[in-house]
Length: 318
Ligand SMILES: Cc1cc2nc3c(=O)[nH]c(=O)nc-3n(C[C@H](O)[C@H](O)[C@H](O)COP(=O)(O)OP(=O)(O)OC[C@H]3O[C@@H](n4cnc5c(N)ncnc54)[C@H](O)[C@@H]3O)c2cc1C
Image (cartoon, rainbow, N blue to C red):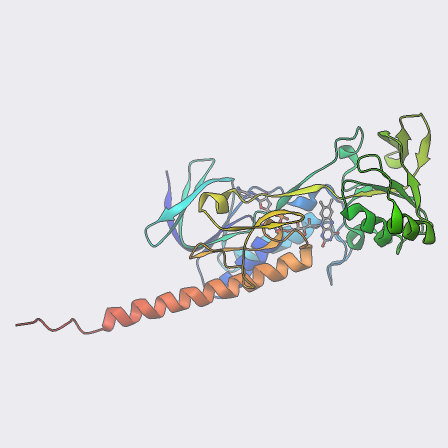
């Protein structure tokens, strides 16, 4: 079993983690990134809304990021962190391969996973015609036929939001029931069509969405489907350290301050693991902010150590 000592261990090496590792490497910190190499947007061929990289394959951005981190001496290992614990003044991270990484500070940037509605044909098209984020994928299907596969109260606004991109919106209300009252009036006012019956499956043709088949056999023709999956943070390392959580309407997430500091001294978190709304740009930014805060904390530790090393020994009492 290897035992290594680092200034910072980053668990999760995609947008948030690599951004932090780049900043830390440039701050001349010894940084190691432990990454299982399964970023949330790996299902999408192209990424949108990231200034300077609009339309780029997500994997290309991360490949560049890895090269940049390594160019400053950062080490990146492809591994899954399975156990994280306090270890003296710092932390020990055990990987599935049996490696133990020891570091003074810890940053968790492990992202989140999407639990899709259980509908035949849906998962196969995730990121390829089925999407969650209109800012990421709405423009590409502007003015086309868009279905909103409702999963909860947020779906009603998702329908109104997508109406910004297309006049042809079908609200598939199967899982939640048709909207009533003011919501229905607002749908009618903006021409949002409601399908209340059960949806049987997503139909694809020629590697594209063709529509949804209803239980009564009708095909509702569509070019794209938007839905809000349940977002589950991959926050096991933070759970293992006992980090405090906040219950939000959209789920339970570990609590962080504006710099990504958790309730556990010496542990930060950034990106989707603590922020359900973080797109790539926000995750990169959050990683950079956390890296600055971590380096700040390390400098203060270094000052304390230096001062105590030169402090005169206390005089012996008679
Ligand atoms: C289909 C789809 C399309 C999207 N398109 C866009 C878009 O066009 N534009 C945009 O801005 N956003 C888009 N997003 C959102 C984007 O995916 C997230 O904003 C972004 O991935 C968050 O980055 P992150 O670094 O926080 O987490 P992630 O990218 O999920 O990275 C987390 C990393 O940590 C690793 N990891 C997890 N657990 C462990 C562990 N225990 N040990 C080691 N490593 C671990 C994972 O393998 C992964 O590599 C899309 C999302 C989806 C689902």
